[in-house]
Image (cartoon, rainbow, N blue to C red; front, side, top):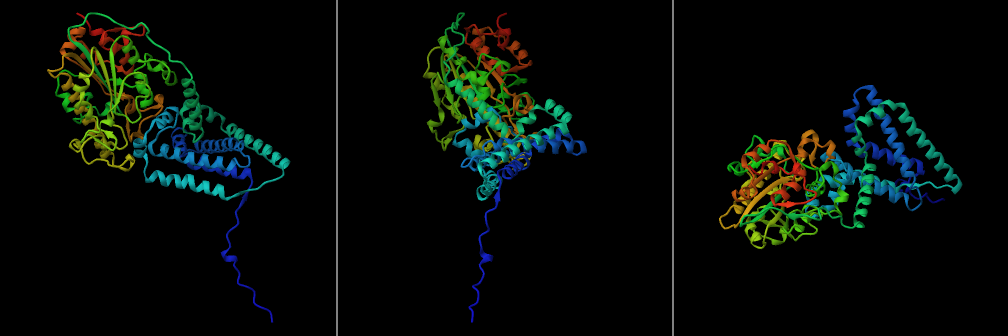
Length: 553
């Protein structure tokens, strides 16, 4: 009598790992990235190719085939044992992160955005981190990466593998070329008229931008400092009082929500109550990010000639002022720092002061500048320029920028994902930051005009760039300048001069008010500060000095 067969365990068997050849795995990963991680690209392409029409749909399919083939061709270059899978995992994770920020905030990851990211500290990073980001990376980065690791790659003898790779490469080239040829006119017209589309290709454009940035940074590291205005010197006779000019560099405040420039809401009530504020309602920024705008505004070059990499090894306005014998101080409240502008001047990071009620968890609100300006002035001698780099309206967690007393416009958006809030709540939160900036600036002017200040004083305020609050699906800032919406490039800019400084420089108040009705920009800061401080230099251009035409009779 035979024994019964043992119960089958086939139902509990672990499924065998599927085997894929390099060509198929490469195409699947490329197709996933093009189809899933490039949704921002397809959204932009739909706007310019009229995807609802048959011709537009055909062009879109041709674009998808071209990108998939081109990306697969690039990936296949790395198809070596022990290298290929780690490479694909890195690409998938990178594409998932880039895709999240492009789809969520409407941003483009170019070299300036990468520069901003590298300058981001823990606090800024935390403000952008949230559960949605984690879920997105898990679904579109980690999960497909695990699948790549799980599958087995089918191997062949070396000569057959070489033939397969050559044939695969030729096939991809044919597919890419065929896709281009099938809609060549559409490709040519669309990419010529909408050059920005290439910036949306994920992750290849970001990788290109990173390489470009690395090359520029490497050049700056090995380059000696380039001087400007070596013969800068003081000119003209001064009054018995020294001159003190405070330059306040704002953060992310846009002109569209600036009360003095015609915004319907009272976001600048304290400044509006004064009669000695000159508001430049048509001011524009040099960039759409701190990493570009701050070095640019202190540079001797206008926006069109400014180069961020070159600025890293070139002197700026602060160097010229010091060479002319003027005391310069930089007060920093930005986690990302001064972007190299203050590298050669005494700098104080105000967050280390840890003032109760103003500072918390290593971050301080901008009111800290107002409260100890008198002390900072007392610690300097002679003509002085003090630069205050503020937190301003830095997002996306706008509600952290002001105390509860300035929760004027409600309800507010307490989330660091602005797209999750109603548009009105988001605007309310942002407007509260502007109102707090108004309060801070009014306090600085009060301190500079106090009876105990034995000096001719002045203040210039200008934001580094603006901010998008959901217009056309775009949030935050950092968009490429030529494509950036007006909300990111139009900025508030004001000037206040004490009666003593106006008299000493011969500036006519009425003339300056008239000048403020004309366009102004961050390009004007360099020459205007030199003019106010009585400094002559080779690089001084009176056409860029907003006070030059208002001096004298």
